[in-house]
Image 1 (tube, rainbow, N blue to C red):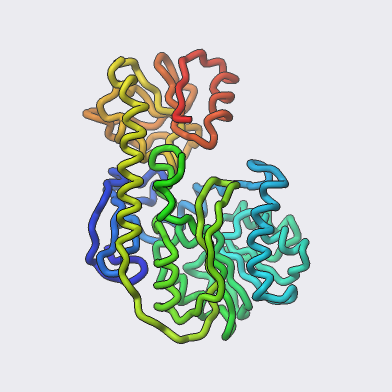
Image 2: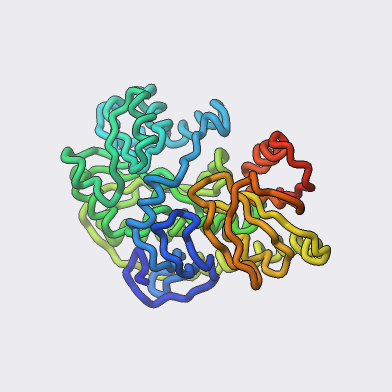
Amino acid sequence: MQCPICGSENHDRIFRLCDNMKILGKSLPDKEAYVAACNECGLVFTDTIATQENFLSYYKYGAVSPKYYDMFGTDETNHYFEHILSIISSFIANNGKIYDVAGAWGELDKFLSDKGFNDIIVIDPNENCIKTAKNKGLSVSQCSSSDMNERLHEKCDMIILNHTLEHILDVKSAFENMDRLLKDNGYIFIEVPNALSYVDEDAAPFNFLTYEHVLHLTMHDLENLAALYGYEICAKGEYYKKVSNYPSVYVVFNKTGRKGTITYSDLAKNKVMQYIDKSKKSIEAFIKPLRESGEPLILWGIGASTAILIDSFADCNVVALIDRNPMRQGLQFEIGDNLIAVQDPDTVKKGTIVILSIPYHASIEKQIRDSGLKNKIVTLA
């Protein structure tokens, strides 16, 4: 696979991510995927034979974007959106045209609209997201970074990629499309998780290596993108995204057409490897007593952010995998010498339930108890 930023095929695989990515949908290939580090520019990325179209199918039909106001409340969500507003308002007037790529339910865009920005288009491939954003009174376009150039015909003053770029495997097409749609001297706001800070967070093991994030970016990578595609960085900084507990970095790119030279850094590779080692030690401390007891285990909640944990239970007595999502039921995972399929919660029998999700463990435990199950429950939280 080529590096999504510089195109080099010279990279090191630093971690086996999974034996398949079908947890994201049946269109994903039944092949192994790895975390890799480019030896030419230093980007850490997912080395997979999956294509952008494979991932796009997941975002169209399988993914469920978080609803910040529902999950984190009005105060926390508005505080986050104020952070974005404070940055972009220095570069665009209220009557400027904004394209928000992967704007999901339109929560940020409704916030900006209420603050006086009156020409925003929410871009998202998911029909439910688009309908919800439209019901908020927002202008919408059901498309993605891959085909927005075909659907949108008016140039804009600013493009927003708010925790979006890390989901894009075909970076080249995305930037070429944005370049065509952005006015001369226009701006791109980008905020992404900061891969350099993964290791510093007290989070669930491998939490930041969710299958959805195919790029693990740093400020160095964003500087390389600016140089490669002809942008000047006119604002940058770090921010802790409390509404989903992500250490982040942000930039504002100004379109100049003046290209620069890509440089190499091994800092991201080293930091992510430290994070992987920390995650391995953390999950081992949790699993060891379960392995030694030999008790039957039911792994509950097999999603994009938790399927990575399955390999860690290879030497345990895993008897079932459970997930409520019908699209995941029937998918098979190799655990030790056994091939186990994901099943509906109604099939649960005897065994200790291990809730894999950290952010949603409380709500999952409530659902389990409300269903009448009396099984012992343990969580990573």
